[in-house]
Amino acid sequence: EDAAGNITEVSVVVDYINVDLFAPSLDATLSENEETEGPININVIATDDLAISHIVLPDGTQVNNDSVVYSVTENGTYSFKAIDVNGFETTKTIVVDNIDVSAPVLTVEDTLSETNNQQAILTVSASDNAGLKSVVNPDGTTSTLADGESYEYIVNENGTYKFVAEDAAGNITEVSVVVDYINVDLFAPSLDA
Image 1 (tube, rainbow, N blue to C red):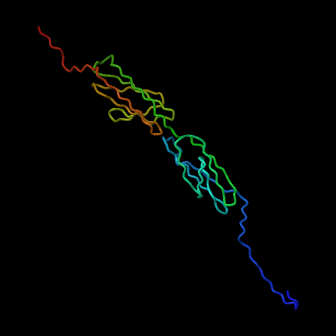
Image 2 (cartoon, helix red, strand yellow):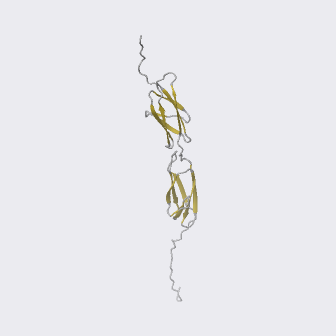
Image 3 (cartoon, helix red, strand yellow):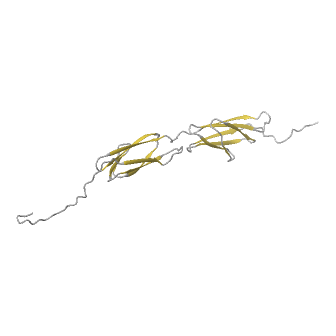
């Protein structure tokens, strides 16, 4: 207002102040939940009302993004931290316990059949810390057995017989057995009188 009473009004709109009262949200998921020999990817996604500044990985590396894929080869506890543009932070911890790098234990014992000297009995047993998937026999057939169970595999010829055990994570153990004691006699004895 001036001395003569003239009035001028001015309005100003303020719409640029960022009022961020909340920490960011952080989510971490595993690429694989079943037993695996690894690696496993941890998919990390951060969201915020305004913007994410960066994500801090378990090894201390800073990623200037709102998402990251972190690969691990060992079981363990992994912590991630998301920090928004105003400095608010959130930590997320995820446990990886399904990486199995131990191969199954496979045993094949051979004995000559007591009733038939033209057969060998191979007793096959297998076990695994994460669960046994199957045993592939020398003829290509597959045997499924529970941890610690065994079965008999009969052979009628001398030779090398390979068995392959696989666990739920895909780890493999191979055992070959040489059978060289089967009496292969296809002819009756001759008798002179």
